[in-house]
Image (cartoon, rainbow, N blue to C red; front, side):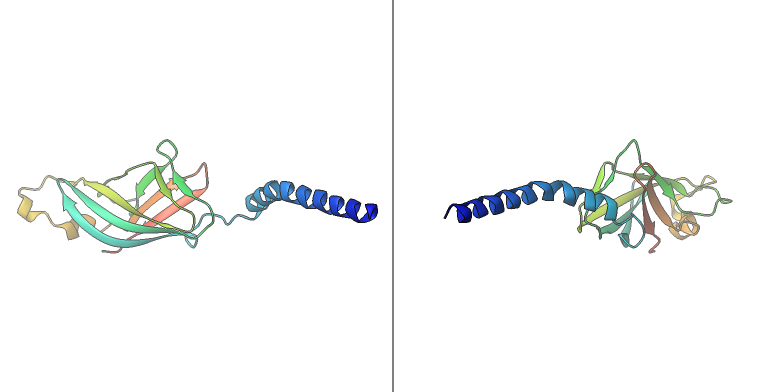
Length: 156
């Protein structure tokens, strides 16, 4: 009887030891096998565009296909307009930061493009969104510190 009781105690201790070690082991496993941030793990879909007082608002649905949160912090994130380097800038993009896309979830992101025509326009009626945006191929949010690059593609 004493041998059976000792066996149960040993089994209980072994199980408790395994449960206590499971947490750190899973954290290490996730750190070494985590999927890198790229265009297949962090995807964006263009939804709409609208004009608001001197700027264009581009709306995107961003999908995070990884098991970890994608965070874009103000001090670490650079927002860029994607266009040919030899062309004058269409405008200056802004995104409300911090931005957090949940693990295996989605988040709506709006990019405000402050329009900067290269030459003054005589009247508002002559302003053409098509002409202003012909060189714009989308946007990107880059956090080099954490290795995250989110491409917001052209959809207009």
